[in-house]
Amino acid sequence: MNERQRARRPGGRSARVGADVHQAVTDLISERGYGNFTVGEVAARAGVADSSIYRRWGNLATLLTDTALTRLNAQSPMPDTGSLAGDLRTYAAAVAREITGPDGLLLVRLAVALSSNGQQGLQARDDLRDERTRQLQSMLDRARERGEHAPDALDVLDHVLAPMYIRVLFGMDPLTPDYVDGLVDRLL
Amino acid sequence: MNERQRARRPGGRSARVGADVHQAVTDLISERGYGNFTVGEVAARAGVADSSIYRRWGNLATLLTDTALTRLNAQSPMPDTGSLAGDLRTYAAAVAREITGPDGLLLVRLAVALSSNGQQGLQARDDLRDERTRQLQSMLDRARERGEHAPDALDVLDHVLAPMYIRVLFGMDPLTPDYVDGLVDRLL
Image (cartoon, rainbow over all chains, first blue to last red; front, top):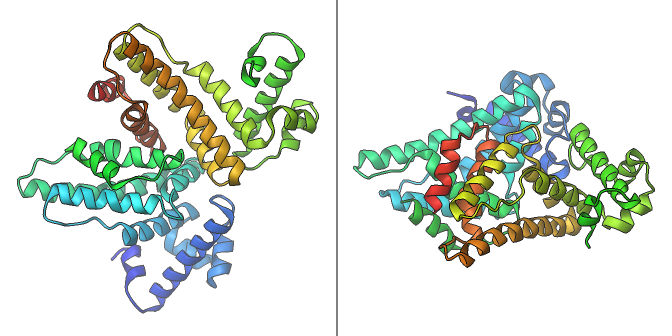
């Protein structure tokens, strides 16, 4: 059982600590932005010892990506609708909702912050990307197992996810359902 | 004549001040990152009065975007090769070189910083986007005038620029010439 699974298990001290620490991170990001708080400040806010955080997450970069992944997995889990077009449309719509919401550019902000945070930051960014890519790949693999012709995960990134992120980043939302469906249809 | 043109004109006090202020901004970004310096600090570094900066640029957000645009226009000017495919390939290759270079994510970092900097930041971000889109649109208009079938500027953003930005942001470079040309060919 990995850290994320343990943190999600209802009840238990470890789960409570995980939830408190994630909440402290979320609050500090929203108050100060990435890069403007320390592990010590997260620990104080969550009411745990610094050493508990270091033991469980290793460093701040890993804690930041774990918090983001937990949130993303809750907000836009990979769908399983029975068809590739259905899965991709549902997933793209969830991502569009998420990135136009109040914490919209969570992933972009996090990636920017991690990119300028040395080797630990780069490693955490790569792990985050690999985990999200792995989830997307599972969805595409299920389609292939059903005999559907599925694109590569990188094509989904390039032609469905990247346009939505860049449009939101440069203030070109709203991402209408027609626009989002159009990105999926164009790819398929 | 707008500020940028004045700043670029060789010689003259205004041009020298513009160049000194842009250099001060570039140095401060590289030392501290966006959001971690003030107009007063730029002025001190450039050896000019705060009031000169406010009179010419109005606020820090506008100064940041003007500095970025001057740099981008110098590094990846819009090409005019005589064909749409040639223009787009040349432009995409220049953007790929620029964003995989040392200051690679300049535009993404700047947009993230401006997005969390109130109304002035959002306005400056929108102006920056509109100016770059206008330049791209001129290139596409030239192709239409030659009788070529040209995509919309937004399609170029979505399917050529956005994938490259997101790949660099998540550490998925290098952007090989085959990959970059492939994005253009797929769009055309």
